[in-house]
Amino acid sequence: MTQPILQQNSVTRQPPESSSDSTAIIQVIERAALNPDVDIDKMERLLQMQERVLDRQSLMAYSSAMAAMQTELPSIAERGKGNNSHYATLEDIVDTVRPILQRHGFAVSFRIQTQERGIQITGVLMHRDGHREETSMLLPADVSGNKNAVQAFGSSTSYGKRYVLCALLNITTRGQDDDGHAAAPIKRITSFQAGQLRQLIARCPTTTQEWFIGRYGGAEQVPQSDFDRLRASLQKRTQPQQPPYDEAREG
Image (tube, rainbow, N blue to C red):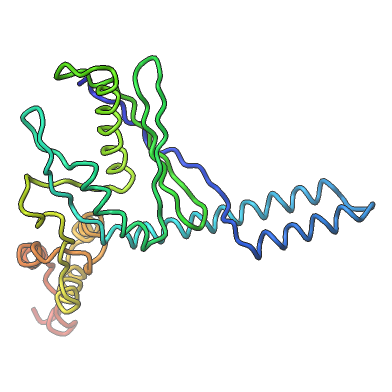
């Protein structure tokens, strides 16, 4: 299959349908409509400002929920087989992430469009507070294996949905079928172990601290499997503590 074209996230914002906010805006508009002296331009500016506030609130809610959800999304076992390779099936991905999405207020939908250059698959990740993001993939019909036109369309659609969904949620896939163990959530270190790492990180050079934040985000997010190796590495990078002033002067 020809290499697909994956377009980066294009963001659209939909104001959350808060009943109290919507009611307040409607009441303002009704009062303004009954007032012959109302300044229409000022009213439009107020409504635009309110819309920006709602957009910002929905974006903040989306970002917070996404950050929380990322800690629960596992790697998906690659059970599917084809063309001498393994891949995570769409069914496995959806079955794994659906309860996690629901728990954090997310839902996913897809748009399928046929174009001259192929089939465009667009995934839409929506949050209950109104913000949404989209990712699109353009790929040709999969005619491998003597597929007919309908089979080629279905194969490409399934392929596109898998990769678009993984891109939206930053999902990784892992290995071949191992009886489902790869799909289990990653076990994180304990709070005590996280405290040990924080003490070590505080004594490391700035470059090491920046690397750690970029790699893990925080000590609590370190996988249990990385703890021993990471602790040993940080111990080697720690800077020696400065002696008290009197000892330094006498030395």
